[in-house]
Every structure is written in C-alpha cells, then in structure tokens.
Length: 68
Image (cartoon, rainbow, N blue to C red):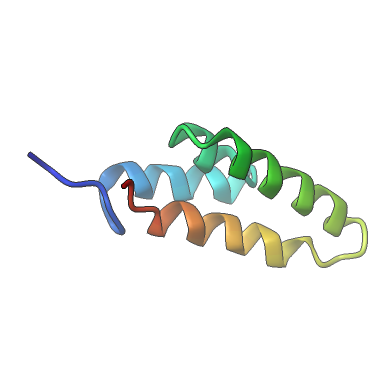
C-alpha cells in the first residue's frame, strides 16, 4: 500500500495544478474549502500585487499535503 505524502506523485500533480491556478491542486485532492480559500485570497491579493504570496502558499500546501 502506498502512502500519499510530500513528494508523492499525486501531490506533485496537485502542486503543478496550483502553480497554474491557485486552489486547483487542493480541489484535485478533494479539499474544496481550502481550494476556495486559496483561490479567493489569491484573486483578491493579486489586485494589490501580493497575490504571489498566496499563490506560493497554495503550491506548497498542495505539495506537502498528507491525508489523515
């Protein structure tokens, strides 16, 4: 049985998805609430040029996700 965790193929794909659209990786992982939070925060903060912070957080969160 393989365990999903940081560096697993599913998390790498999720991180790549979040690279293109913040929150998409979380959505692919079946986490709709964090996906919505990442997407909305990034969209709002890009208006004041700070969206890159949430965008990076979204990528790292998807990459480091470990299911319980």
